[in-house]
Image (tube, rainbow, N blue to C red; front, side, top):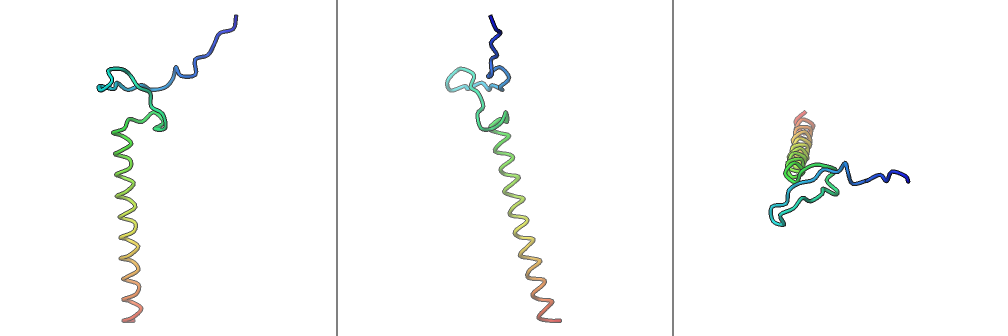
Length: 68
């Protein structure tokens, strides 16, 4: 008889207090929902900072071209 490999054995589980049992992460690739939310916040702040920097550089470029 062959040894059957359990493909779900290595997956990370999280305690779900509402249902009273463990649940498996799916599309989060092992990250907790808190960590995913934190990652998304950092990414949003980074994108906003990048856009603001582009606007500032563009305004400075326009001002120097008009005055220069």
